[in-house]
Image (cartoon, rainbow, N blue to C red):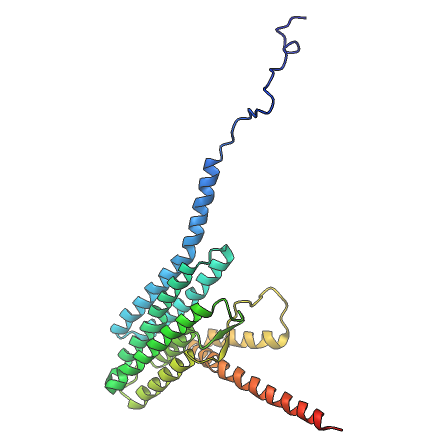
Length: 280
């Protein structure tokens, strides 16, 4: 048999310990992975920038006297604010920069914008109190956001400490949505002034508010929970102003209500413990 045939050729001798396997081309794959990672980091920031844009646009609408549209813009911004954090947690792109950036955007949209809208709506007619109250609301919103950033890793994720700034802005916007024209009535100015001060104080309070961050929509819900949710959806569909006002009011008072219920429960438990100890 000829030595030139395939069966007759001898396998080349490779030096011991030397890997001559051709290198794999991993540069393209690595680059695509890095690009995808960068896009994931940018996605929450896109929602944050949109949040700031809507806050600025709400002020522009207020300057034009379009308070209903400005209130709706505030509500949309609150929805976007809830989405950017969820997206960051889903993609694993949470960072200190994103947290601070989101707080600055919230200060514009849920601090500055509602304060200016309330002033433009009619509080300017009250003189010095007309601009001091919006300023107090803005200061309390900034304090609330700064405290949230400091306490993020130390608190129960199921609750917020103090009324969240988006919820306070939403409650104020619901008033402007229902009463876009005060019709030059002084008592409406005083009502909005009182609402502004109460919301500002609740933001810097220590009342606990539900956060809904760990709400699991996939698990089964009992009928006693499903029926109120269905009623809320129907109310939102047939009468949006009533839905916005009622939802904002219920969430605003939920913090003091939870505190009061906790105090009453502790007092009842203490009384029962004392009665059991007094029994022979």
